[in-house]
Length: 428
Ligand SMILES: *Cc1c(COP(=O)(O)O)cnc(C)c1O
Image 1: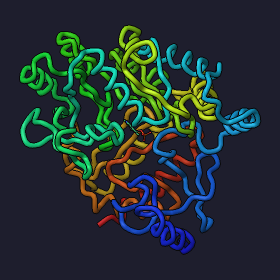
Image 2: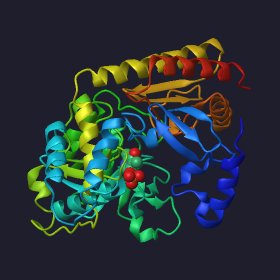
Image 3: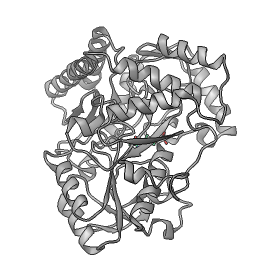
Image 4: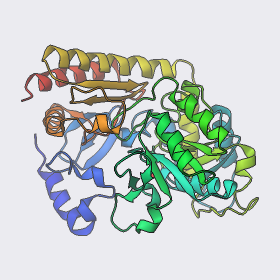
């Protein structure tokens, strides 16, 4: 496969941009080789600058549930741009997007728009701290909430240890108020709360883990978290930046019927442009300035282009049959992959919720981050390159989810299964 233009582009970009990329995983460092530079996308496919076409399952890491360059999204952005790209004053479009979100997501009575998922989680936690007057926060091992300093913390040994930063440049003091416990383990949450009575402002988690592959919650887990946090006056925050409007129109909270106090959104609600949001119960959101004393602001927040792309996307998702189609296509793909790994005797754990899916190369059952870490990343590398050579673009990491979009045709899915079956047959 020709990739000399991408290689040259990468050599140049590395001189000017750290790693040649503006977000680390794009650089293919987890799979070796060089990234493909993308020229354009259309429907289910992306095209690189060497002229190769790929069926795309990255979908810009989740947002593009309608596929690339969806005509109504493109047209909406174009027509809004003709009237100005930003005002720093309110527009009725922001209220329209807020209205759609409030009506869709059970926990959200009021919502504030921001520019990224990172901003959403950072702001939601500030509000939870302001609301409760407490400093400590509880998070789950390997749940990702963006690159907020004190959220780049992982567990040390044992349950509910104080967070140690995972990243350079984060003072230990910043991570000191972050407690970390494993996923799918309500007892660990209880223990952490007992060890820090009346000190924990919030518990933040991805209701379906989507940044360590895909790890669904065990039956009853989210209900238990709801009960425990309510009992202790701890704000329960669902980070639905991936799962919002992805696993159901109302997100994971409507799929599992558990209502948190606050919710963070991003990705899909911007329809491929930068939007994030956080919201929740009215008495909590009242803390946000200018109504309350928790400061949070943004020059480009509620940007007309981004908000319009979001509104147009969410309107398409409100059409009947949309989530059934996503579910069906993704199930066909997951079943095809499972059949292929079985046929060729390859140890694999297949995980899927709605249109999010993951193939872990492991013989273990994956129910938390430790299980996910047993995956054979060298095998994944071979799988990744085999697929890429056959025109299928999956995320360049064993731990990044695959996303099926509405534009993936049955033919795309079948071609993908065929390609994957060939690759799996030749894995060593
Ligand atoms: C992507 C993601 C974020 C961060 O969003 P950005 O827009 O990249 O800042 C936060 N939480 C979850 C669950 C995510 O998947």
